[in-house]
Length: 182
View 1 (cartoon, rainbow, N blue to C red):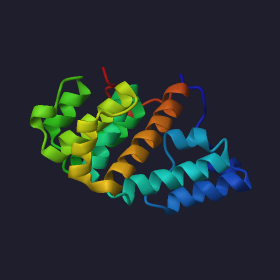
View 2 (view 1 turned 30 degrees about the vertical axis):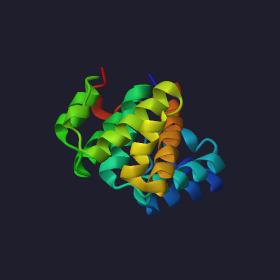
View 3 (view 1 turned 180 degrees about the horizontal axis):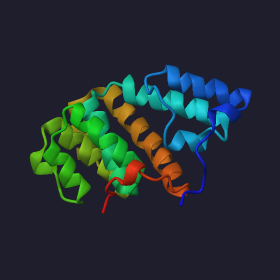
């Protein structure tokens, strides 16, 4: 059982409708998961969805790397809906199925990764587990991603941490009985 009901488009306030319509018209093309919760605070939802759209679709990171960082975050938080939505995007972006499966099951995917993937993975894991990164991890991320890439990576990790918290606190389920993360 979830702690919220999906929004009824016919019952939206004018402020909610404005945000809802913007999401439908934007790169997401839909209102799903955490945004049904966030619409209860239309201003927060508007700002969050705009930041998320930038980080996901327009950041300095290519989809293969941004989706990898999203999966690390989803796995760290065991954010079921986030994993369910982004594992296919990661595969479409070029992340190998073996890496995705190793992450899903809690394995260490590093041996399967290219250098830029390892840099993102190590940076994301360190950020989540140790709340910061060592000099060597930072230097490798900077070498692989550049200055803007590292800044966007930090923003992406923070944003998807917030989204994971919304998903977990409101117990947003995966659609259609999909297999949850272990």
